[in-house]
Amino acid sequence: NAGVMQNPRHLVRRRGQEARLRCSPMKGHSHVYWYRQLPEEGLKFMVYLQKENIIDESGMPKERFSAEFPKEGPSILRIQQVVRGDSAAYFCASSSGTGGETQYFGPGTRLLVL
Amino acid sequence: AQSVTQLDSQVPVFEEAPVELRCNYSSSVSVYLFWYVQYPNQGLQLLLKYLSGSTLVKGINGFEAEFNKSQTSFHLRKPSVHISDTAEYFCAVSKAAGNKLTFGGGTRVLVKP
Image (cartoon, rainbow over all chains, first blue to last red; front, side):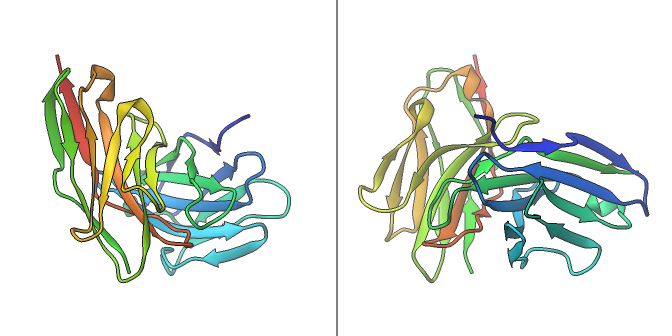
């Protein structure tokens, strides 16, 4: 039973390029969450999705960031025109439901913007 | 909105000594509470969670935590640490029946021989 998978594990982009981060939830999980961990800080919630729906995007920056979780395939976090401040570890988590259900985390994607 | 404060950013401790990591939260609604551990360059792993019932919660790897509603705390303890417990520990809350987790800033535990 594979856990949450994220790829790539490491991503280097130059300022102005696009970054695409992928997350495959655990088998049977239909709830996906994205969190960002800036250097020396805790994790901050970004967005919560279910299949084909964004449920809560209250933590997403207003510009350049978008997320999707299509009917088929992984969830994608997309960052357009990256800037140095986007350098961080991006973690995806999945759960089978809400209301205290455990969120299982992937290994993260470490984004470095040069 | 909820917030979580982990009072200690770093805790050095000798092997086989006890350790306590402090966590306080604030919320205007009922919450669920979690402790996660993050080993270097890895994702987070759940240690334990409190949803309801007994305020003393036992988790994996010998960790336990006690929910104190009056003090809005959820401190994590282990009676005897191992070198392998060296990691960063995060306390988190979510609204009861909610979804997103709000994390504290983390506590780095360094276990020394």
